[in-house]
Image 1 (cartoon, rainbow, N blue to C red):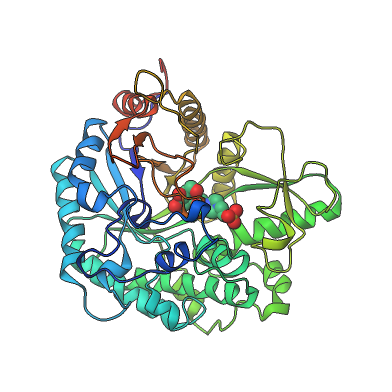
Image 2: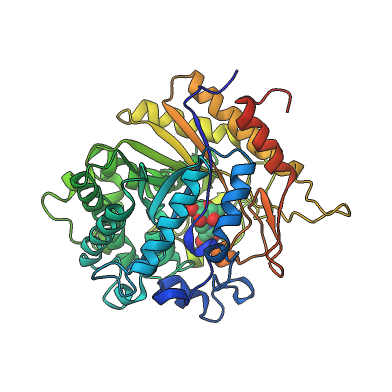
Length: 461
Ligand code: GBH
């Protein structure tokens, strides 16, 4: 089978993970600057201060993407480059950077896709209460309007939020991401305010005649480890927090009743006002799906195959369901220990088709971290990454054949980059970056992906 002519093959990044230049041109601090500079928060104390210095090397980076034949590039805008304090008029230097990047991409025949928020909230807004404060939603809509005003003439695809699950529940419940809180009520209030911010931003962009706007969610295939009610209830909750708590309000205009019931003890989702869900469920032109793995879930504390501390008791991102834990299900692992399960992607897409109103779906991220040693010949032979992407693109083909309206795939990531709390130790890129010299070297997977794009097919690879 070949991919449809209008299927988009792209690559994705995010501002804080690649740009560096943290103090350049009046950029303000974000919650990730503060978090990464707090001792003990990230592996090796790594921060995005320098990252891959994309802010200064964007022309070289666009040239590399062009040489690989990328059709589209999804990047995020750093809010504190545009509004150092999270409010007020847009900073010229910041807007100019994204304008030059956009032009460079268009000249290279690469379609720019913008994510407005990939986790870097201005620290000044955090100090005013952050996402648990309703006002942040309005600040986000203002900021979104400014960015679209400057780039909307050239950028035709807009994503409001990247993975609100992470910003809310990892940032405020398990505390593994900025702002590093462990406060279930704050986490749940931020779920609602992030989604409200999404809806308000959609309205702001529609007022400017945006052509394509959507949201990106990180969705998982979730299933119970057994038929035991302890496991099925734990899996129901994990599916609720990861998938339905975000899909239902955005696509159906209501929160899932069972999860609302489970979190009532923490004050529910906080201050949900009349009319909010109408705003949150504005019609979208696309749904972005980031898919990485399947979770097989147990509620048994003594399950023999429990996965370490990530979903462990101490740092659970699931308010009221700390006992819900992931178990291994025997699939091969990436170097971050994530199980490789391409069939899970088919399951996620089939579920969207079955249970939600139809909307064009784009895989806005999929990829894998491996150690990626450089071999004697000076290149990275990342056969494991090729296998991973091949498997997931084959899953996309199966989903399309089954009638899922899947219209694109963005590899995470094009370049090695700063993997948040995991620092620089694990590499997601199709292009290797030497963090000492900033030299970029396409890995085998980059050349392979390039030929997939050229032939629009997985055959003969
Ligand atoms: C995406 O997150 C992000 O959008 C992207 O920026 C990131 O680089 C990429 O995937 C690869 O991770 O165990 O609590 O410490 C995917 C969801 C959220 C999965 C954070 C791993 C670790 C959190 N990721 N999570 S924790």
